[in-house]
Length: 386
Image 1 (cartoon, helix red, strand yellow):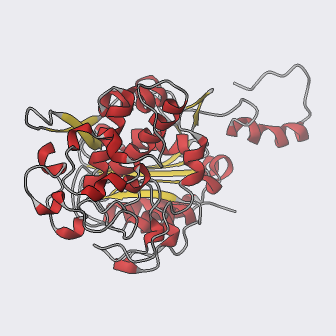
Image 2: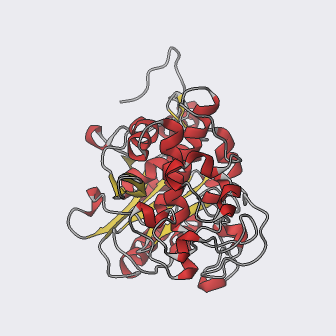
Image 3: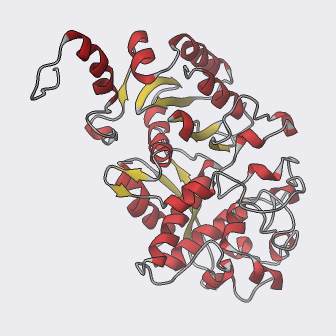
């Protein structure tokens, strides 16, 4: 139905105005309702994809084929431009609603949730105050006495940008375990001792983000899963999720870690919120300072990351800056805009958002293994028409 205006427009004027109505410019910003109440607005017609979403339908068709041929895993993937779902590809029954683990994409989500906790703490809305420059172990009572005195020097931001020295994956130590293992209290030297002094090296660390989930719990007074749902998932209309828990002895307890599972469509809501400066409808969900700071590395380390020898400038607050990749491990940022943020996860999981292009992509498999993460983002960016 055509929009109603209190004045008449000639045919030429409507030709100018109607594309804006289709884009939602005159109707105000668009935010998708929850999956149970309609989900993302979707374009399938090539003309509409080009005119309303500003995407090249032929390149999107090529991208769909590439996604299907890139591996043999079951998956679901989406491309969102200007709030329109312009591509959805999947393999496997029920993958569109599958909420299995998204592997290391969880790290970026945890950092985003922790930013919300930090902002609320500064407003006096949580039991304790915290910033990303605060000593992390001030919020980890379960970790005391410290197994390495240098842990007292770790800042919250170093948990997120892989410069903490906490059990880098390069050590070969297992990522999951009981909390006494994660916190360095079971005698394992990999978790008891730091691999390097905080801020002096870069070592990709799943353990560090497990610590971050406990920091969130101590600051907010709520287990990480409950706070994440209340502060981020529900405001964005996310309806399906899964959280990982670790058990512990009587001293350490049972707590959620940072691990989560979300379908691709739900992952895309997080990226869409971040592309819009952290806002959702009339609320500032994610603090603006976090959006700004994720646009650049959040540390001064220059030595290569220990496991994959990646450029350390790839790492920000949980999110990664793929444009800074220079070919290490076969991963290149060529053709990716400088403001792109992404988070890949083992198995071909990916969430990426590009503010300059108003573009969000997501892929979920619930599996493990390598995948061409940057190629998905590169092809999606290349499908945006000038």
